[in-house]
Image (cartoon, rainbow, N blue to C red; front, top):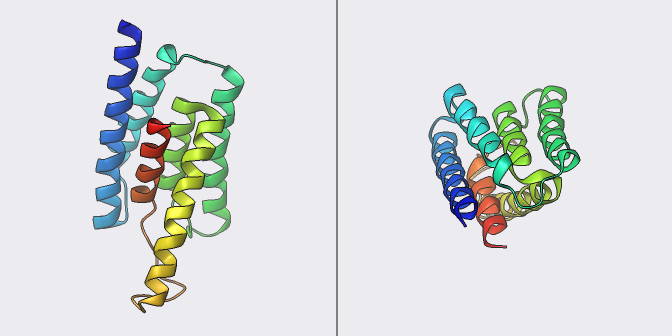
Length: 145
């Protein structure tokens, strides 16, 4: 009972941090290192309270984030390294399967936003859009499910 309550509080705390990081991403297109460190600490604090803990699942979630950081380097920052670090933190907290759910939802949301931006002629193909607000939407869906 107490473990479930602590789990929920930490999940809400991660959501608040992710929301704040999304606001930062919208305003400045950057995420502070302090925010990323707090996110990692909160996500690591969640590990002992997960119901179905598997070290391989946790490593898989981390690998997803590290892959995004690798893509960031290969694409010359077309994808932000900060986005990859936040996905890695979420992957640590929720494991590979739920991290894929968060990332897939965020990608779908960003696809819809990008189509809207192009249709409304508010930007071109090279327009850079903040990803963390969409990641927050995916996080909310993951919590609800």
